[in-house]
Length: 418
Image (spheres, helix red, strand yellow):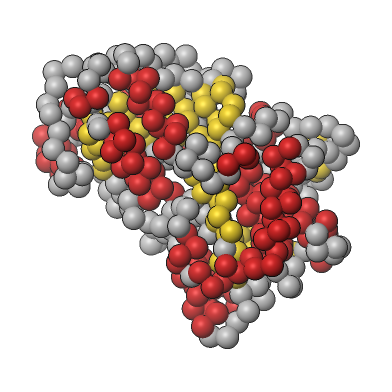
């Protein structure tokens, strides 16, 4: 498995386009109040031009742009790209069933395109079908989906759509680092993980976190894996939707109150950090690992072990420059860390140590070095799935497809696979 940048094409199930009986004008009026204040220029053609000043990118965001996680990382990354390239940015955030029950990602894209957007970025796995439908509807306009695999020729769900591309980071590395930090910081061996909904992506991320925790628990802490209790509780979506998901505040509290001294976040929002800070203030010896956003430890710095994060600037810069040049950024791009400069400007995946990691930081550096030079390969068998069937045979190394399409959690983990 390549530790650096990997480019592939990718996936898709069948698309169902649901006709909604409402007026486009009212939708546009509603969305215009929610998009960025940046003025846009109306255009009669969505085709890219050669002028960056005339180029508008539309960003469809599943959650709040200031969520302290996934969505904020996208928004801040695109803000930086817009500033660097001197392009215009239009966005609509909170595009989800809880905040906008009658609005689809495809309808938001229609509105952004009507305002002059010449490239649309959909920033959630939940938008995979909206993104593909938009690409088919606007065949001369480049569409980017962050996550998803419809552009992956070697994937299971390839759709031959020339104006459609996928961009994602190899967060498996970040999650292995996060899991290692959790194991280095735990005294009880009880690590909780607050997970979102269950799919291939989330199963592979929490499994990567477990592999990192298991390795560092055994290798550096010199403790028996039988004494490691790693449990995931899924809330049902990327963030809390009252009445539809488990409350992540309660899930985090249940971990902290149940003897789990390290809790890891796999969701978009900061409940794990917020409740950890409260638990620590109440006298509990607890720590946490944040997710998604480089500055995530700032939420509760004294008890933060670290945060794996995405840097969307380099990949979005390349995609937009490609579109401005009149070409379609239609690759499947799955970018790993730049281990030579892990937290630098060109690394898609990074890891920031937290204050609570303390004197374990050199051990974390050693672990990361092993991931970078290949001497530590956690995707090498023998490894079994949760039901006991083999994931990897002894000595077998996982392919990209085996990692991406993770059908179950791994043996040794607690929590549901489906």
